[in-house]
Length: 242
Ligand code: HEM
Image 1 (spheres, rainbow, N blue to C red):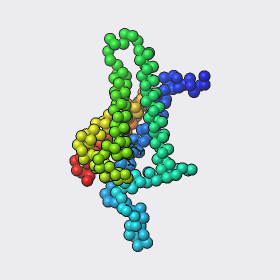
Image 2 (cartoon, rainbow, N blue to C red):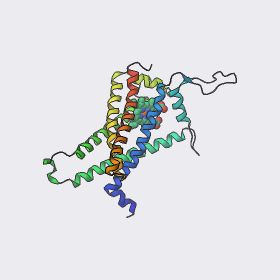
Image 3 (cartoon, protein in one colour):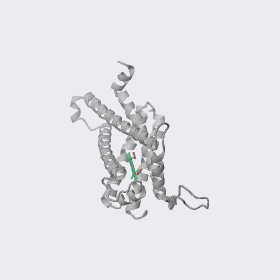
Image 4 (cartoon, helix red, strand yellow):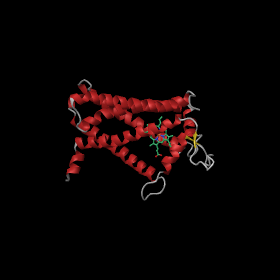
């Protein structure tokens, strides 16, 4: 058996898989939130100006122009949208490995639990891991809904391909959809906080001197992403963005 299979079969190996895929997913969520801030940029973007300085293309809201840019970016030896498809495949593989490793770590820790455990006081770690499991399931359901809402448009009655801002407004104008997004972002916030905190432990960066920095980092990033993401449905729902 190779060292790699040996490592993967150990709890340490599975936690490393969770940590590395978690970093990829965390990077995506952060970048995605920053990109969505284009919702707040007023006015429109013109891709082509003619010699007289007049707009020779259809002016687009900044969020739509950003979406169009992401869809058009190619990659070496790949057609337009090549980069988007690479990102989609990497994300899909990361999500599958992240969930698989989480399931395996849970099974290992259940197998290692002493039989008299049920009568013992609840430990913080078991509470945190239960929250992580349920949080993970809520986030997965959210992502499935979200793709049907904004990527395929199946669940968005006002959907128009490429009209990202319009689609967002159509979706978040419905109060229960906006509320669902907000609840899912709170679940994501808890998941990110605990995930970021554990990440350092899984990678072996764990010392009393480092723990204060670790906690501040996990809190700060979880709050930034949660507040940013909640602001979008809230801004549309309250009429701040029309
Ligand atoms: C309230 C917060 C969020 C808003 C307003 C939002 C908005 C959007 C929009 C408008 C699109 C479609 C972009 C396009 O048409 O090109 C999109 C795609 C997507 N979003 Fe979000 N999003 C949010 C949160 C999240 C979160 C938390 C996740 C992951 C946990 C996520 C994962 C995705 C994915 C995977 C796609 C598909 C990208 C693709 O392959 O085309 N989003 N989002």
